[in-house]
Length: 283
Image 1: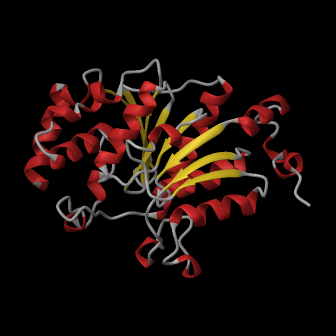
Image 2 (image 1 turned 135 degrees about the vertical axis):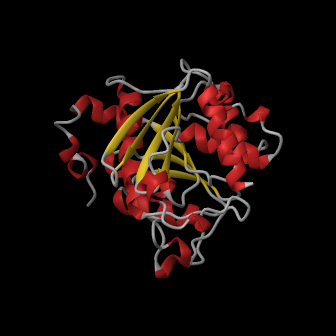
């Protein structure tokens, strides 16, 4: 017989019994349940969160096996949204998961955010239209928005809150002349420190035009650790939250941790230089 208090009793000590009740009643939306998003779902469930909205229109494939929490032989070809809902309920049978299996768009974004306290971004890097739709809705509804990006063998964490710089002011997507330029803005905005750059051994695997890049399972685990810790801080109202225009990056391969401050977002002089260098290399 499942017992919530017993299942998550080992979290107490780092959180109080009262805080455990706050976690128990918090509602989280996750869009994108493949790489980092699926790992976030599992980590949040093990932390005691049990009310979710999940969105993903994709299915698990064999090439997901190196990093995605729900990718197994017996889940290949199955919907990511359904598989991750099942996995969460294997941890907590009482969990409530509302599924949005066709993805998020302007028609269902309000329903996706209904009653939500925190938004966790697991959307594919190249799914720009969906990301902008969700970001604008989260900002309008004053819902904190967290994205942990896997870079090499490390992770970067970007947080937007109702009191932080807004996503457009930071990324300046509207300055991009095409989707490719907007992808570069997202890339340099998420990881301005570029800690992963020196040890990419095969640059041909990072292909913007083909919309694919290399990945590691370690980066996904680090993403989830950083992001869920900050979800906890936001929900419990304690601990410093490093939000835009600041962004964190930790790289386990290089043993480095950096907090970058970008007060002008991607319009800053250094960021513009990085943009031009990246544009020349990838476009």
